Image (cartoon, rainbow, N blue to C red):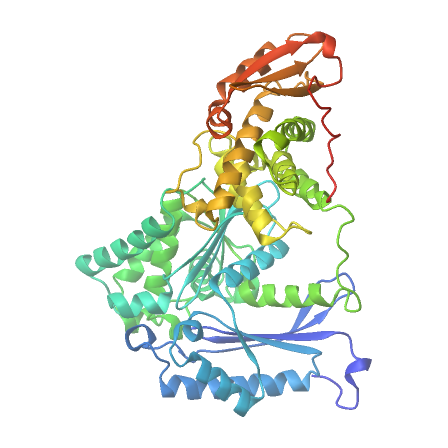
Length: 544
């Protein structure tokens, strides 16, 4: 431990984190290195079973709370001994769901002097992702980051650091064990009920997976004990400690095979299985069942273990927050900078997307006066145009749907939550089906924004069609509005036949929302300038 005569100012930066879970409380003390990494100085884990019987009673029971108070007091004393600069304490599903969860937090503050932050399932998932990105090489791979706790399972689907989908599911190892009685050996009927219960949640919450992840990166006690058992079977039992499991790879068939054996093993015998923590023997079947069924559901064969999980993510987030303590992060001079950075991160075709944004801006300028388009919506359209193809990072088939989710989870500086939601939706509808009330992604938009979305999506569809060949053949597009028709004059050196054909094919929504028939006209003499009754303003990609 620390030299008691030293002051905190004399010591390297030391941080500590406590994760209060449904099954156990985990604690880590780390020393931060100059490059932003850290080395673990001390760790503790107490199996307090805080969530015991919670999912039947709806409340935290007195005995588990007492065990938790004692464990937290002990961890606080250790952190004080190390003279940590910051100790962060978070609680997950058990405290989050319990009717007396807030009362538990107040009592911990009174007795232990610790402030507990109750985090959401989404925050849990993001911390698990942060840890996975630091500890596992995910470059160029689609991934499912999965954290299985006692009360819930958090899942992030994405490509590298880019989030496509995020789920929190009621599939914790303790919750399922109590619901399906899987603590002891399971006969065929009870196993069938457990399996169907897991599959039902996956079907209701995830449905058809948006893509097949190359690898599952798993954190939480289920994954570390699963890896410990398999590693012990393959290698020296002494090498199966949690610290030696970082990056340990497993295949789905061997997980399924081990699950079958665990199901048939009585609890007392299961406690003696090498590589399995005896205190976790009663809930391991339910936990491994989630791994096996989820891997099958996603179609993924490889599973990699990341023991750090939520605690590691907590430490990394604390380090990031301290990186510049004296000044708030600088906002980009141009909020489109963050849009372009994200598009590049997703490997979008920059030339094509910039050209589509240019054409979309010119169409918008030509339509704005007659159709009453709000001036501030121009930036939303341009941002959607610049990012409309980010979904290709996941796959081509449904790239417009993936674009919606990727943009939703992107860090876009300078944009409000409403603007990001609109941008994501405009990109979502740049192809295929038109916006419909029954679509879930429209739930956050009010009636006026849904109307605006349809108009902006209609413009983006036409603009995207006008660069169907990705050759940027058009130099400009002009708008001439008539009573029943709108002439769209295409300036190009040679006939943009394919681009014009695709724009015509995709102009159905444009025709409906603007109540006009678009007529596409090639005008070679127009050169680099659009033909219009009023010259369209130059494309502005800076925030107004």
